[in-house]
Structure formats: structure tokens, C-alpha cells
Image 1 (tube, one colour):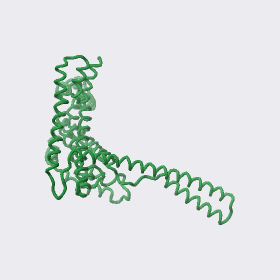
Image 2 (cartoon, rainbow, N blue to C red):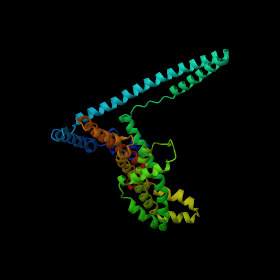
Image 3 (cartoon, rainbow, N blue to C red):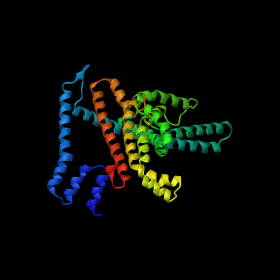
Image 4 (tube, helix red, strand yellow):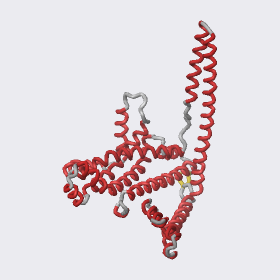
Length: 369
């Protein structure tokens, strides 16, 4: 395959049709047609974004309440720049503090070694005192060496915490939804038993799930002094799981139940075992629909996460928005507007990633997935 075919295949698999006219233009194809593609995928969206920013700027000059004005694009992105600057400044301070603690640990270990050498030459009570001092110095050195910055999470830290939370909930949801969906697709009786539960619980809001999730988590760790993960993180993650598992479950069921009957008949002729039919025919044939469901699940999970973070006080983007809202001033609302943009961009990135994986398992025909 030449470079043109490889590049076009890359555009299709990654779900980036915006790059396709540029590839064709470089390859020497009809410039007029390619400029039409560039206008469709680049110029028209750029004009739409420009109009949106103009409308946003106009609205920011006329919308206000309780002496707080709607932040405009310039103010919003200025505060976004400041949020990232604060993150890097905080990391610089934390890094310097950690280096100081490391130097302190080295000095304390040297003092402890000196005290032990003196103790070897001493006798009686003086020896005991020197050994006790050496032990104390070693403990202080250990604490200094294991120093961890306790500064409040920055905006960037909260972004990564939100990503960890949503992936935690999404992975658990996938681990539950795929096996149950496969069973539903292969067994009409099992599907009939599970369908009423799916239909009842699928539309339930995360706000209703969260108190129950918190009760279950607190019950699980009631006798534990230090849970293996923070309670707020687990509560948000389980809420994401409960709300996002349904699309994957439904699509997996549909994918498995709609496997071509000819494939099943061939498997029977070849006398494949149940597990061989499952792993060599049914799962590969249902992967496109399964990944399409996982793509929807991840999108749902990302939307649910913001509300779950707010209510569970998990230090993620939802808590950031809520904390800024409590401040109720012009800067806070500009930061909230910037976080909305970041939440949307991350959601877009997650969606592109899932499209990439879905197209990879579509066997060269992404349109069917």
C-alpha cells in the first residue's frame, strides 16, 4: 500500500475526515474537489466557531445578575491561562519543598550514623541516650524522605482525577455489561429475565443512584480505618458505573443476537465447542456493535461524572465547578466557563478514542459500526 492509501486509511480509522482532503490534495488529486472538502471540514466550522464567539461576546455584555456579569471569551480564556499558570507554579513550589526534604533526610541520616558511631564507643546510660537519638533521627529522616506535598489539588490535578474516576467507573461497567450482554444475546430465556431490570434502571438519574452508592461504599468500609481508595472517589466511580453500563449491555446483546446464522451453522458443521463458538465467531462478529455501545457508555459516564463529583465532593472537575460557584464572583464564573470548554474538549477526545477502537474492530468497514 502506498503512502496515500495508508494516510487515507489512517483518516478513516481515527475518525478524522478533516485530514482527508489535505491528503488527497498532496497526492495530486483534483484541487477543486479537495478545496470543497477543506471548505466543508475547516472553513465552515471555523466560521461557525467565529459566529459563536461573537454571540458569546455580545451576550456577555448584556447578561448579568446579582452584580455578576456573564464572562466573555477573552476573560474566560484569560482565567484558563491563569489556572494553568497556577498549576505549574504550585508544582514548582512542591518540587522545591520535596528537594529540601530530601536534603534534610540525607542530613538526618548522616547525623544518625554519627550518633551510632559515638554510641559504639560509649558505655552505660550515655550509650543508651545516643542510640535513642540515632533511632529518633532515623525516623525523622524516613518521614522526610517519604514527604508528599499536601497542597490543594490544582485545576489540572482535578482534570486527571476526573479522568481516573470516569475510567474506573467505565472499566467496571464494561466488565459487568459485556458478559451479561453476551448471555442475554445467546440465551432468549436469560434475556427475558434481565430485560425488565434493564428497562427499569436504565433511565434512572445519577442523582438518584449516588445516595445508594454512597451507602453501599460506607457499608463496605465501615470496619476499615483506612479504605484502599478514597470514599468520595469510589462513590463517584460507582455512580458512573451504574449510569454508563446500560448502552454497552444493550448493544452487546444486540450484537450477539444478530450474528449471522450462517456463521453459527458453519460452527455446528465444524463441531466447534461452546467456548470456541463464543471466542472465534460470536465475539468477533459482535465487536463493532459492542464498541459502539462502549463509546456511548463512556460519553454517558463523562457527563454523569460532573454531577457525581459535585455531590460526592470528589476532587475532580465537578467539585471544581461547585467550589467556584460558591465563590459567586466574576472570576469564578469565568473559571466555570473555562472548565465547561475543557470538559467538552475532553469529552470530544474520549469520543475520538472510542471511534478509533471501534473502527479498528470493524474489519475495514467502519460505516457498519
